[in-house]
Each structure stands twice: as C-alpha cells, then as structure tokens.
Length: 496
Image 1 (cartoon, rainbow, N blue to C red):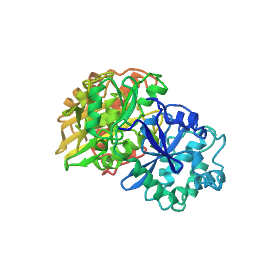
Image 2: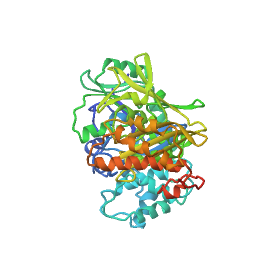
Image 3: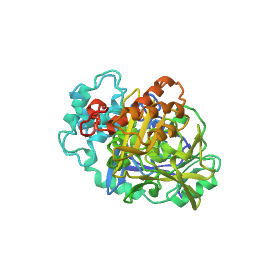
Image 4: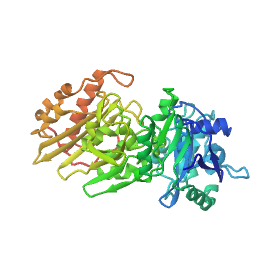
C-alpha cells in the first residue's frame, strides 16, 4: 500500500504525500505549482475556464481527455499525466498549433476563458484516429463545456478547423513513447491510503480491497468521477474527511455484451459507454451527448449518477424505462434489485452501511419494442434536466401490450408512471383517442414542484407533451416534425 499519489507533470513523475482528502486539482495547480494559466470560474464544472487535460494509459495507447480541474480531487489523479495550458507550447517558445490558430483567427479576447478553450481543443487535436479536421458539429460538441463571455464562437471554431487540418504533430506526439512508459510504470496495482483513520484519501486498486474499505469505513464518501461530490465541496462547502476513490478498480470500468443485455461496471464513464448505448438505441446516444460537456462525460460515471440518487439525473429514467437491474456489493456478498426500487425517497436509497453500487445490467430492446428518450433543459448541453422522459413500448399488431414510462425532475426520485402505463395497454400509437386517458393519468403519477429550473405547471404540461410525442413518433410520424436535432429515420405516417 502506498501513502502517496504519483502523477506525470512535464515529462517527469511527481510524488505527493501531503494531500487533503478533498484538495482539488485546480488548487494544487494554482496554489502549489503556481501554474495560474488555469483559471477558476464557476467552480462547479460548468464554465470550462479551469479545463486541463489528463492523459491515461488505455487500450494500449495514451488517451487524452479534458476535465474540469475545479471539481477533480487531486488524489483521483494518481497514475495520470496532467497537461495545462502552460505545458503545450514547444520548448523553444513556438506556440502549439491550437494556440497559434487561436491567435491567427482572433479567437481570444480577455484571456480568462481562452486557456480552457485551448485545452478542450488540445484534447480534440489528440483525438484517437484523427487525421484531418473534425466535422464542425464535432468541434462545437468539444466546446460545449467552455462558456466564453466576451467573444464570438465563430473564430474559435475557425481556429480549430485550421489547427487540425493535418494529423497531430506536436511535442506530445514526439514524447508519446516516453509518456506511455511512465504511465505504464505508474500502474503498479497498489492500494493508496493517505491520512489517518479519521481523515484520509484512499484509492483501492481491486474490487476486494474496495469492498473491505467500504465495510471498514461505512460512513466514508465514495468518489467516482467527482462531478457530484466535487460540488458538495466547492459549492455546498461540506466537510468530507473520509474519501474512497473507486476509479482505480479496473473491474468497475468494464462493459460486457452478453447477447440480450449489457453489463456495465459502476465506474464506466459516460464517454466510454456512449458507443455501446448508442447501439442500443439512437436516443440513448443523443442523451449521453447532451449530458453536460465533454469534460463531464470524460470522468462522470453512470454508476455514480445512480448512487447519488439525484431526482434530476439524466440516466436513471432511461435505464428504468429499459428495465435495468442494479448490482450492489457488500463485502464478499452481493444482491440485485430493479433499478426503480433503489430510489426510496429524496436523499434516501436502498443501500445498507458498507454496501456500494457495483454494476448494472441493461436489457437490449426486443424486436417488438420501441424506445424514446427526451431531455428538456434551459441550456442545450447540460448535466441536469428540468424534465427528462423515457419510454419503452412493446407493440404487437399495432397495439401496445406493455409500457414502461419513467421521468426525472417530476418527483423526489426518478419514478415510473404506473397509472399511465396501465392505461396504455391496448392503446394504438396511431390513434390519439386511444391514449388520451394515459396522458391525463400522469396527473395521478406525479405532483411536481416549482424550482429554479421550471414551474410545476410547466413540468406537468411538458411531461404530457413528451408522452404524446413518443407515441406519435412510434406511430411513424416523421421526426422532422418532432425533433430539432438527432432525428431518426421513420416512415411517414399520420396520427389519427
């Protein structure tokens, strides 16, 4: 067991043994290293001013991903390379191609948001398989987590297109063999424990070590991607003295296709799950693409989104509609339960002391089933929703024989609409008159509240509209009438 973490900085290994359990990567960079090019903006992972890039040894290569350093705990960086805006120019002073393109295209003004923008584009510059400029919409997606307040985005996108006209060729490409060697050397499989029994940061390297730690310290905070726990510290100002990081447990980052279902470890990130979920259904892929920013998806985990029990989390409603089953581990034992049964009340889940979320089984759609998911937010790319609706219908001979409907943002927990489901059995998606009662039954299933995201009345009207939208689409109505983006191919039809 190690009592320190080790990271790669500027081509060398840095060992740190004096970290606080909740010390952030941003504070380390700015206060310890005095690497002040990385800025503190919103301090909650939304604005992107604090974006840095982490390098990880993954699938036989060094993979670079952008992260929000303001909500990343320093301890979670063990075994990774950290790249900041100060690091990317050539040693002789020549700017990195992304930096030079930003200058040439006049894509920077005040300089506060620009470092984060540069680092997001640096990660895209090193995207696996890139040989030329990515499509414009891919560049826009890469910049969705960077909110610049003083310049237009057009010159920034133009700079990205210019910088990426050729395959990657920078100092990091030249140093790739050395970096790969350092990262492989750091992957020593040792458990990390820094601190005392009362205050510590721990990062077990195996599932058994994790289970033992959680049993020993049942009150400890489990940390996965940090996109929720980080805000408890930076915005909630909550004192957290015991942190157990699950990100070094390889068994929790596996995705297995077992034929009729997917099995995911609780530590699988949104970015790593995106392709597999998009194969299940296009709406799942689009849902993940709109879940926050690339900085959030790079580290945020599906298991963490479930474990924190958020009533406005995006994935639980979709997974509940699909009939997902949750796996909970407790020491050497485990149990499975339907995902919807995990959420008991606001802030309360069916998880016992010493127990943790270990994995998820997600059934694939059968040939007679259709799925739809819709996310309603004030900002298009956002990690929380005003209303999130997911629907799975089993249809035989044009008649709904089974329905699963789940909403987020409509109750104190992600919740199924059991009354509406019952009234849909026997309905025909192509006949609106047959499902009018199901639409109204949503008023029996939910009593939404008003908050900063939406009013109760808006939420109810929106939920009704989304159910109608799902049924209309399933009847074959062209999605050009119902979708702004992410349209699905469907035969044109009219709904009576």
